[in-house]
Length: 560
Image 1 (cartoon, one colour):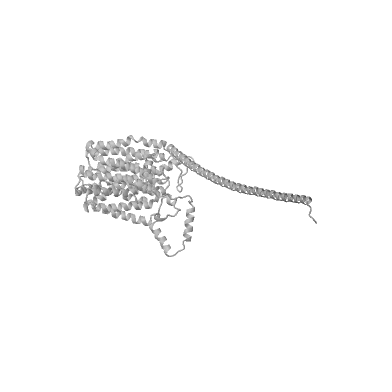
Image 2 (cartoon, helix red, strand yellow):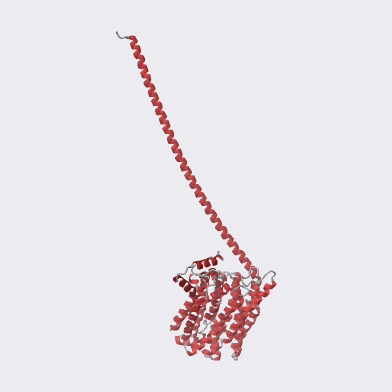
């Protein structure tokens, strides 16, 4: 649980310089409107960065991604503390956003790695407490620093704080990504190892210890998960997160979560300017005005975790044959997880949106400061509690890639929030605070049937998604099998053709030899025949000569 507890610390610093907007504008010689654009660009990158770090964390592991994100954040804070022009402030705030918000998806992913659905609500509440309370309470620290040490001290504070987080994390926090270490039984390797484990292994090597026992232990551990394969590293693809956002079930939750986030962000981003204009507060007083909102956020984050776990067990008891397994996790394929999570949401959304409308009109009428501060507590309790519940549901629906799913949620809500912060001051100037806040509350209320549709049809949509994935898997295997059979058939035909060619060659060779031997025999036979004929002719001539000689003797006898 160390990583989920460390992640909120970066969101504690997200809005830390809200009370210093006016001093920064005066120091750099620009308007407050231009300084507000740094909030917009910050949120743009706050949406983009988790899509990269989330995908990278699912591939390489949580540790490398977290260390890289925090290192970027540290360097950005050094630059922000030393810069002295508006362009540098704008660019470095974007870099700072990329580093800090990159840890968001990783925090929720670690919760998914180490918890089951039956107890996930409580741990998600711990992460949500820091993420939601941080932006509300950090202006208090920012106000103190800006008031007494100057606005540059804010970024030096962020630098020191992030270094204090990174060092113990790199030394001791283990890897949790299931694609890397499975259920914890597969030992981490390389950059997924903690620095203490790495140093311990090097000391053993230097001392010349026999590593046979360690190797046997590693083999025993790996044998428990023989099918575990490490993902191949590639450049992080943000489009994977966008694909999650367009999924029918998860996409609707992300959409409504983003609408609730608009209510959250416009309340936080306008508090500084509104309270300075209406009540004339200084930087420290403005920072203190965030405390009721932060208290509501904290109470919601802790309470919603226990509420979700209770509601999960309550619905599980109603399902015949379903038992909660806190060690191995539950099979949610036929469990109405959408109804278990969304059930408590209707009350919180209704009360939170009503408080939002009242908050806008209270600022319009400018009564005592106690009224808007009390309404801030209610908004923090109900609205942040609502999208904390929806964050838990998003992780439940994406067990195979929770970091990517959280990144998709963060991308959509931050881009919508960036657009809202860019125009909110103009809208307040044109419509007034009351109607402006009412418009955003009504927008969320009109879209509330999304929650009912998700609770009603979510389990059906998940079944359709599984069937589609299974068909795709079967088609892929069939295609691979056909390709294998075609390859074997082609190889067989090639071998057969080769054998056939070799046989023909041997037949031709044998036929050639047989033909050559027959010719020789015929030639020999002809030669013998000619020789015999010559011999016979020779004998015939000799016989004829003998007969002629006999006849001559008979005709002319020799004298005695």
